[in-house]
Image (cartoon, rainbow, N blue to C red; front, top):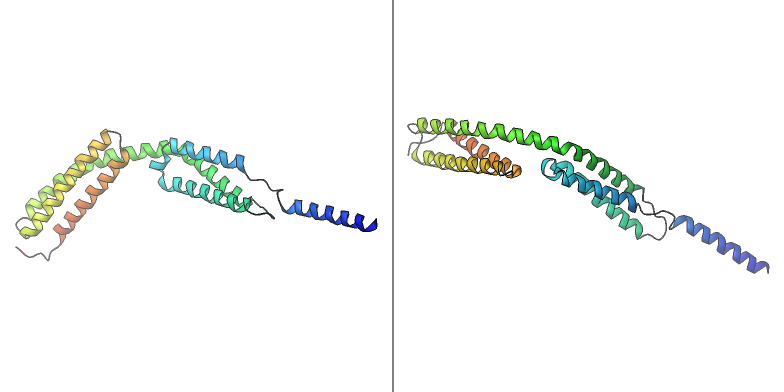
Length: 198
């Protein structure tokens, strides 16, 4: 009798210890769902377009949280979701913040693009004059290259304006970046002094 009572006590103690080390930690499913909803709200606010780095950080935090939850779910003993909860909290907080900030970032980008569109027009006119003036001192090959770059920059500027008018802010920004790179290339050619006349 004593032996069976002893076994029963050991079994109960073992079961209690096993219960403490397994299954008592519950996966943060509700918190994860809330974080995903915050992520979706940030995406709906176009944070993925106007606050790209922060949006990517939210995405990475969510992915890390999901990976940590999967890892902990695979454990039989010692589940601990504290790390996953930290990732979820970071993702939720940042997603909420960028959801509120995205409209301001969009307005700032629109304002900057409007300004850059006007600036690019004057820069292209000035660059064309400089190429014409340099035609006496630069080689034909260099002048032809600069004219080709100017033509490409003018085309990119026209496309940027069309994209902006169509509401495609990202594409307009990228095209203006292309205009800037081409004008810089021309300016570098204009300022170099070691060109041979050809």
